[in-house]
Length: 101
Image 1 (cartoon, one colour):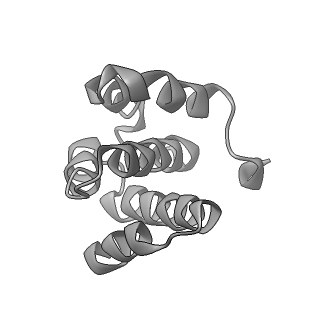
Image 2 (image 1 turned 90 degrees about the horizontal axis):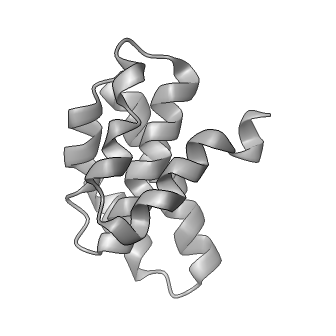
């Protein structure tokens, strides 16, 4: 998964890069089984802060959607992101991805 996340950054097509990071974040959320700290640490390994924030947002959304044990703590990860990424993370929780509807 770490290799895939880094490969996402190499894609010059912004839409594909976004989707790749989306999937990587959801996979991180799923593999963490609700452990928010584990998900956060995995996503923060991505060297690009914008990409890492997108990964965290996707992981939080997945953890909450699946209602893994401890899912209630997942939104606190948004507050740990740099200020410029917090609102987009929070809005993901109030307006879930179309795939979940």
